[in-house]
Amino acid sequence: MPKNKKIKYKFEPQGKTINTTLSESHATVHTYPEHGYIYTELMTCGDIDTKEFITGMLEHFQPVFGTLRILDRSYE
Image (cartoon, rainbow, N blue to C red; front, side):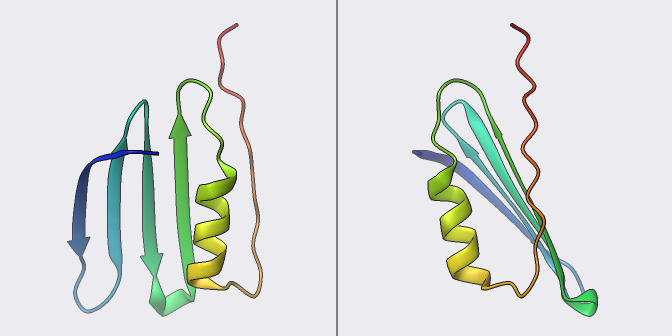
């Protein structure tokens, strides 16, 4: 997934939001360290394999617990 632009915002005293625009999609990560929680979202248009994104997030954050929801928002 080629990256086009990345925007980062750090909250005080903690937490971050990162948004990366990708070709035909975007990925967003919100962290809530005070709750031990992270929220990620990957929106895609077209035929993009999301396994690379999911695998990368799991390897980086190594969660103890997680929930994965896949929503098909196609209009066909």
